[in-house]
Image (tube, rainbow, N blue to C red; front, side, top):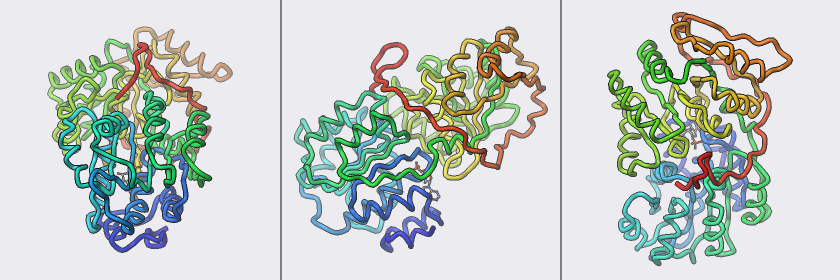
Length: 438
Ligand code: AMP
């Protein structure tokens, strides 16, 4: 469906055309008219579906009428779980509102608060913020919510995962009761349902695609290899297939840094992005990756959320994630906005349990393959891993010389959707028992 059929004004239609969007994505087709009708909305939508424009465009249109923001006032508040996502959504707001008389800004931790206080001094029509910094700003009386008309909670599931529930409830208690509220979440679990009940009034529920649709557009390959040889195999793959750009995941911050050192030693430009790095360092790394100066960006799960690089061709899991849902989030960085993508995972025998959990979540078995020069020494255990995963099926490991993989292009055909993710448990701490707070 074209954007003009959705009731958007000319200024926004021009902005959308400038972004190169010709047709509205399914979430946009549903969400834009619903938000314009000033209803509360609960939308189940993953990153990569075009959800940001789905709420930003109609919110901007609603703000084009009414009183301008008063000093320290905010008319629309968009809350995101991570800094990167806040910066990215704020950029979209600026891009789409170029022709409108709209003042917008972002507020997130890790950078000085003073410039954020000054930008709020005259009031903002749209503020995109992470929960912690928003509360700091409120405590410092830099912001008031008296004028607030619209609240957007983006990636609500992730907010819960990262332990933000109390912050969200606290923020909610500060807001006016008469408010249009929109909630976006990749999953629709019990916890999300109860959060939605407390925050939304008679919401329109939008669920346009199977939550795993991104996964279905991504070709997934699993290479069995000894743990100690994972970096070597990654370097081999990058060089052999001359990947233009790859987003690589490790489980730990130390793992990310050590991998960057090894890649650099091998002559591959790389940078890391994780919670121990300053916001400035993270921004530099992400910008370098986006501009093509950095070929490989190595990220941990928390830092990766919300990274949106146009048409990212390839994602590599050097380590499997602690929780299976993170696998879906990780590989959702490729295969976005209708493009095909490639996700490669380097599997070592000790990760059998994680792989099985992922297979259960996505409802699909993932074939392990072996590159001859990197065949794992513990073959029998790997076979056992296969057997455990599909006890009724005869399973095999394809042993291939990687010359047979001369072309790492993603499968252009979307795969069949099979199975939805199961409800995810509340997770406020990682496997080390530390609270995951961004
Ligand atoms: P999001 O799900 O909001 O993170 O968007 C994912 C990507 O899709 C972003 O790079 C957007 O710029 C892009 N996008 C959003 N809407 C459209 C559209 N209607 N057509 C093409 N690309 C889009």
